Image (tube, rainbow, N blue to C red; front, side, top):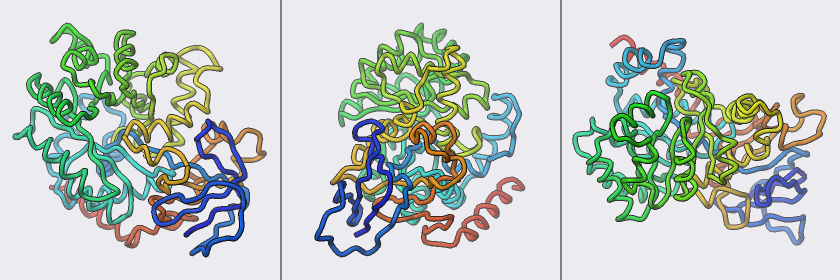
Length: 423
């Protein structure tokens, strides 16, 4: 058992209320949340928070972890040129061993950002799973089936297998996007969703071009098309969700579809700004993702939270728009629920011990006026003091506890990067 005490507790159960309660963990679960009580059980470790904040970890609700090998490789290029001349040719050279190496680098970065779970869409699932299990990191994989897959039925086998492989691993039905997936394949995904009664996720309405071309092909927006195919019968999520019409947002609200916002990537690729305030007003589920490290280039939830809020203030010409506390909820509770991680959304007895400690003794957290808004508007990765997943401390005071030396992870990733770039 581990005891956290003498701190500021942000459970996210009742909004952003902060208390002085303690948290005890036993194995992978939270077993007590409340004031000091005696007699005390025997603890393996007692952590004096010294006024620091204990809160749920952030959830990176859309990313492509292994794209760390493309970080800062081809920046400042038009989107189509970047994709077809730089990204796709190098991704063709990827191997399972390379994805394993590159994923571990991403996991280290997630831990330093206080991210305790990610929603990943990429290749070589077994290698990716191995990297996460070895590090002790929680991940949910999203199916990325498209027209280039030789066998679309692999999606169902992956769904069944990876939801049984390990407590830290999950898998959700998904396909890459409308523009890379034929109608018959999307209809197949819809049939699986109906069979298993589960949500479906996909890239949707990321760019103006994507949206307009879908309307030319089908006479519908991407969201309207997916609705007509019954893909969202059991909910799901649209990664990016930048170019949504009022009709699209009504479908999201009706079907319980989450809009998963990726402001850093959308800005860097000049894709646009998602209508977050409009979606908030319609009570649409909202979450935040970084997208991949090739298009962001950081896996930093603090930067994403800041961008979500201030971009809405600018686009709405209203400094009061997109309250920082709502954004904090998107990055924690919203992300967990979008990913189906309902046991990881808040700090409550019986839920998973996925939590972080925010260092309040750093200059950017002083003086203490409004802690939760400070996390969004002036917080940074520098404030993450500890990251715990499933009751295990994987990062604390700049040190990683992921089963191997960090320098070995870096060396392996750099070796594979050179091989791919020179091959």
